[in-house]
Length: 396
Image (cartoon, rainbow, N blue to C red; front, side, top):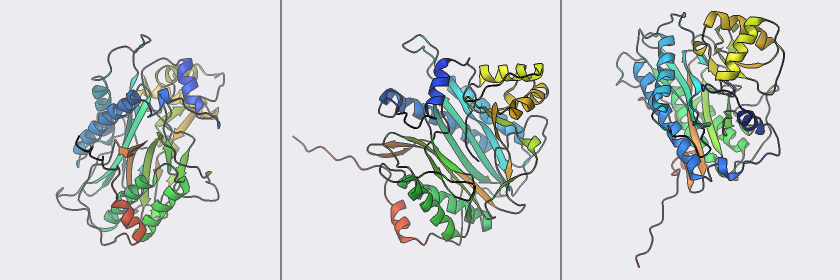
């Protein structure tokens, strides 16, 4: 569930490396040219958001019994590419083509699958009535990234509300998201954001899934160094940091009726990877060098799916050596226990001067849970508007 990033068909340049690596330096400060202080940057985030919102809607509508999971993933990716082609087709002030496209490949994870299920076309899994489907994808414009995720239950009557355990985790996740987005304000701490999510989960009797992080995002960086670690453990810890103005967050909410400690079932299911730009190694096998050359050219800073490779079977062979020498980050398919209900919602949040701007959000489905939020402070918090109302100018 640790987030990294995906694909754009452009050759790697020193610019991409410098921008992606810049966030690994503890003292690095972005100049305003590449932050929300620049209205042109805000516009690019919002266009990326428009692209992913349309792609999510397309996949959401197509998630019906009998649909192939691989086809749904392909639909999401194709929609991102088609929509991205409509924007920013003129060259920038330096005469360069503006890069845009997939920022995280479409994943469709079913039932107790938690995340990262983006199978190749040879996997013939189809959706069935009653299943809970998590849809997760991302896009970027000029390196400015928007991501989104939602959960859909395939009820026989789609107008009927989701009920039972699945309703509990979905309602808890929606409310946790509403609380967390209001905590993501300048001066608040990452610990306070995580505490709000944990309190909502507690009131609904569900668990926060371990390993989930809400990352800052920057240009060509999907997994910035400042994070909200939603659930600490002896193995997972993160420094407390302060939310800052003009930051962008991928608010990632994943809750489970199970113990919230997902496991890998089969490493062969992994099909999403990201170039580890800080690592270098001279590969020995010709197949490995060929696949790594393709990755470096097409996906220099963002995550990619095996479906996007020119020849999947040969790519799988070459990727093994790349992983052995830590040239790639893996996004394994993770599972809770069979029968556990899982909900995943994600939004892109712009921390602006006049309030937070939620530029991507989940598609609503009727939910009927017998449980409710008990914490009075959080109840009051989620009633607050995300943005302050503009004051009317007095008439002259």
